[in-house]
Length: 421
Image 1 (cartoon, rainbow, N blue to C red):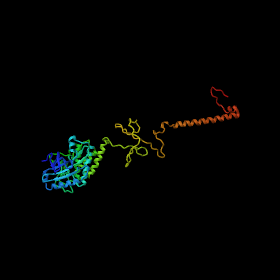
Image 2: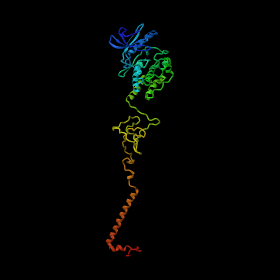
Image 3: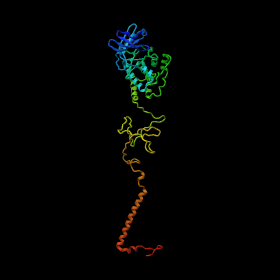
Image 4: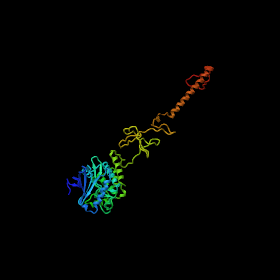
């Protein structure tokens, strides 16, 4: 039995028990030679009775000691004898994710994706070194106060170089066990991706996807059943990331931990900005901005394959609804006003009229009507005729006198009430 103050290997003093599980217990200790705080994982004595376990564990410790990554706990030392086997690791000053979930229940989608991205980065480093963790769970994900995550406890990991357990041996925690592991098949990097998907599900839903009365029942649910739907407030993109990681067929999951990390990091960055991109109302199709005359796109509207333009002028504030017949610039009755777009005048094409009604030219009501034009012409003709007649009469009066002018007029029938000349 181990207790506080006990010394292992002649240099590691056990100070406080900080965790335990099916493989052993973890202590915070002190390396009395180097004077630093360490984590000491002591394996259960029963495991030492398993043929070849001590050799495999030692080979795994050597493999992990060569793996250097900020998201993977450092391994410092290993020792074993007839009664004890222990691993000395970097001490992480933080809380296991399991403790945080027990305290708060659920995490936001942005926070979940940030942690999953970091854990996937660490798994990718292990996979590149030929190591499959096989026991990814919240208790093995240590989160520091600054939000950085470290993957710990590679005690049952499978290394291609170490040649650890093969087909038919089931190791791991049932609630996070991949379907292929539950079926007794060899764990692969895709198995770690599945387990990390279970962790993501638990962070978002506040519960694991499958529960049961015993580990065997839970393991069989991973093989046969579909996970319940995530909460309704889970963003669709995050839902897709998690459910793909939980695919029963390893070939349908994310192809690597690196690909899972990339999509999770992108989702976290998008959600962390606090920008919500609403979709169209239910039952309606999204509308496209109407192009201006000449087929040119509106300012700010991107052509296919080109980034959207950002006009230099500040956006106009939405105003009241336009009057009937006026063009609509973003405002629709029954919908919240949208920021209006600036519309720049496009010169008309060759041969096209220079102006259109309501676009700066004279209104139709301001133009003279054809009847008015005809009246003006007739008036002008009458003036010309009168002027010609007046000139003719004046010339006759000058040549023959006024008497000649009167003799030109002959009245055959005098008008009643008048005098005959």
